[in-house]
Image (cartoon, rainbow, N blue to C red; front, side, top):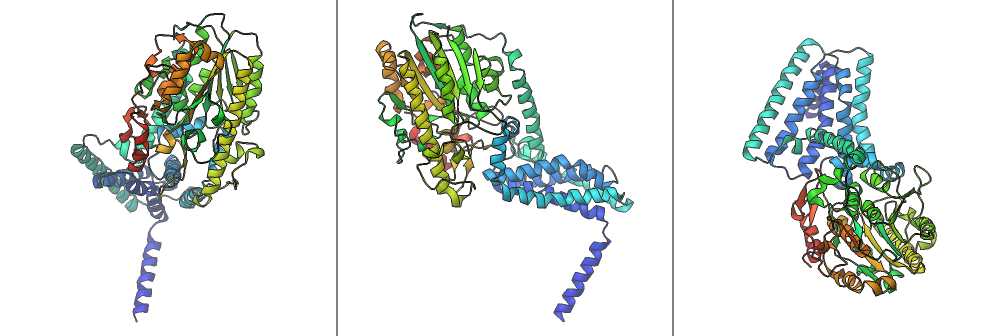
Length: 572
């Protein structure tokens, strides 16, 4: 009897649903699936209950308002395609990082990441991509069917939809006003999806346009640089920009694996295990390394040239050799300031091993030039790790980590450690090249940022997340100088050694250290930020957030676990 009654009720419900126009059913389905990222963000972000209400009700009003602009429901839902794309992107981002909205830097990364890197990343996002396809493609196909059948929403339902849209939109706006009244720091363009990600698109467009016009905005810039070293002293200095080299996996920094068998036996190599970057994103961290700017004045980047220009003004022949692909970023603009600019990647999606950079270094060192400055931009330890080193450097096994899952963490770590082992080898070869010149020479290696490799319960992976972790900010950094350098500038050599245990803001100190080593003076030079100076004083550390604002590390999104790991590296 009970089963019969239940069957009758279900049948009645099915009959009722069948009477609802397909245009209304599609509208309801569309709004529900577009709200999935909103629901997830209410769980992952530090939202108040009122924030969550606004984050649900206001978007419902926006979506219903757009759909109710015309009776052609299918057409209006197809007009929502940008929101489908943003929602899918947001879900994939949450799958990858576990938190945060689509950041300004995520959009810029899409524009500046080469096809090879993008392919490698997408290959490891399969479950998330399948989920968004299953979630969103049916709605779009349904909308296309309605368009083909010329289906329109009938008057009674259409009128009701418009009333509902006005009510929900008004309610969302009122709740947002109440939220602002209770918390003056509240802003819909910060906390309400998709308003916030649309706002970030605007910022990304503005930042990209600003970068594109860098040559015009910086054309009158000068460092007024000059060398205080004797003009007849033969000198060569090399700045190596690493990629994704976190300090934790360097034997030089105390790691329990022999990842630096060659550099670790060189007395003249000094590793700065307490180096912290102010950014976890390449298109920000590298410009910070190449200029006098820090997180506190990053917006001045549009007006300033790089350290390459400072060396040129001081009479050095300059070269910029990159194993990265040109990507229309500030770094590419800086590379063209050099007398010699080379990008050695030979295919749009391929890559060379970093040791290939040394062939070009050898050619440049063979030139009969008294003073030389070389910037090397490596591919480093960028995922996929096992593709960053030749087979003979696969010392730690197993390292076949084609799938970036927690179950494969051991393989990921092994492959990552092999990238550091390989970096150790070619950096040592670089030192041999410099030593063979018998010139006064020095080298600084510093990574742009670190990397998450599923190190704790959060199971975070990669870098460039909207909120950083300790693993992404603690970077590998080292210095080396030749005996000829030490003989002439013993105090600088001793300072490079004595400051090895100090806290280092790599974003602030790299520029000043290499200038100090080369004896270049400019109004932009700050001796207290140079690791080659006895006057060195650690710079205050900030994090450069998504909107290019400097924030204290404890306000940057670092969790309690990250702060506890960071604490021993500060105030040294």
